[in-house]
Image 1 (cartoon, rainbow, N blue to C red):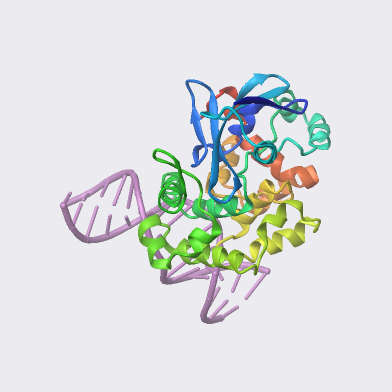
Image 2 (cartoon, chains in turn cyan, blue, yellow):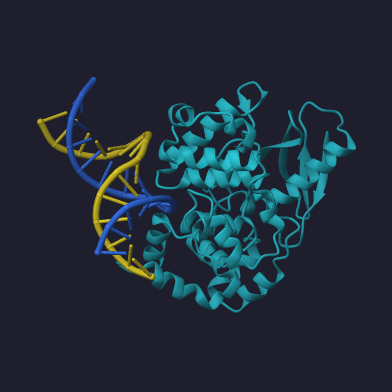
Length: 299
DNA sequence: GCGTCCAGGTCTACC
DNA sequence: GGTAGACCTGGACGC
């Protein structure tokens, strides 16, 4: 089954997909030969539908559901809303582009349709993955995420798995997560979060529609163990708030290289982006990743 | 092959 | 509020 989803003006599918490292974490999968991104959608528990996205034309995204001639109206609605959520299609970036017009070094942003950061179907998946990026190499992050999918996700095709639900993780022991997922000291944090969600003690999915001021939302995100300033700042970006930078060691090095500085403090970086107001986190990230936009597949 | 060192954020205890 | 040390893994390095 094939259908199309309308894209907003200035939208770039591949610059959105490659906006950060999420596209290389399962269950996302990129086929560079066919230029197709595969993601999974769950219209109901246990019903997992792989969806293939590619460019149809400048204004539309091609959506293919392999091996299916049709889907129910509920399934189609869920697929459309999940794709729009992950690709940030319904968010308004007009004031961001207007702000970028004022700075010569950011004129490329609007022209190339950059700015939308790919996110997972659920906040839970984004948060667990973000914890898996802390204090380790990218290789270890991919290993932990692969293990989460393969050992606790649901197999939807041969050797292909969805991301586990909070229930699936909450049903494990800390020892299992340490040993089988190789999540190390992060294991109790992820287990505690999963158990709190299952017990309705916290509703992190509501963060995407929260009306709280960014500072209060940041504090709420920080209340989850394992989410420090770096992780919470980046989670906020995936919630559509760009008031925080989310600086890590890679960002510090990129900033130093771009601005030809030997040493910079985080406070210096914060001050540098202060003039960009509520969009500073996005301008910060785009400046650091500008060289990715020279290629369709930067990594 | 084995042991040691190091990098990478966050938490906790302490000042 | 700021700082030190522990947490855990995998990679690099020396032997």
